[in-house]
Structure formats: C-alpha cells, structure tokens
Length: 73
Image (tube, rainbow, N blue to C red; front, side, top):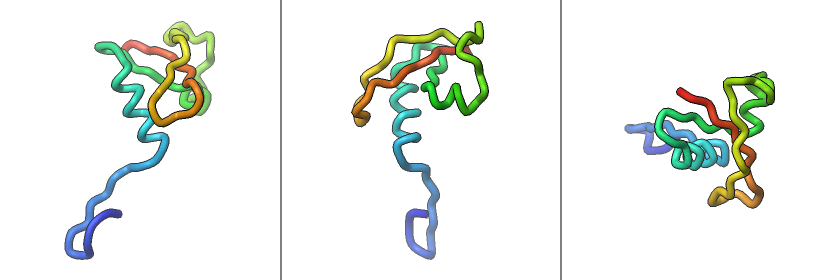
C-alpha cells in the first residue's frame, strides 16, 4: 500500500515486476517473452512447439543473463 489513510493506492514492486517490464521492452510486435522460471512455473515444456528459445539477454538491474523464450500472441 502506498499513500495516506485518506487515499490509498496499490502497486506491484520488486524484481519480478522489473523483469516483466524489461522483457516487454525487448519483445517484438505481437510477441511475448518469458523467462525460464515463468516457463517452469507454468508447466510448459522446453520442447513445446509454441515456444522458441532465444539467446540469453543482458537486462539492466540483473547481474545474470536471462534465458528467454518467445511466444506469439
């Protein structure tokens, strides 16, 4: 929660939100980029024909390269 008792606003913060924002910036038109952890949590197999493995990305704010998968919207 952010704000005073008379006016409250809610927002999402943290590394997951930052990563999602950075992946959106890198995605092409009508493309969805997912990181490896999201693919794992969603139960999507690495060999799923709907996903295309991309080269790891160096993303601002993250010390390691992010393995990405692309899906068409």
